[in-house]
Image (tube, rainbow, N blue to C red):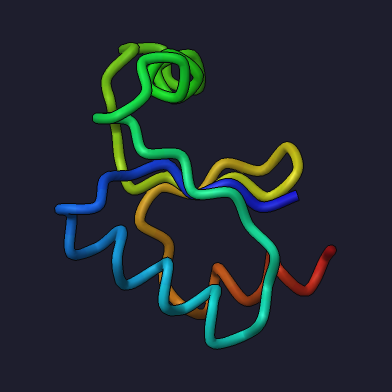
Length: 78
């Protein structure tokens, strides 16, 4: 499962949304500004508990601002 943590107002988040949508990939967009539960889930991914977005998780793999190449590599493992 692919999760994208970010906000509607973040240009990098929008880039990843487009990246995933143009490849017809199912993913969950978790807006950390609109939903405190999503924000808490993101904080739990990092030791410093900061809202480091955009972050993409693919199963158990956590990717923070991945390059297209890295993102494709992990998508290919699905």
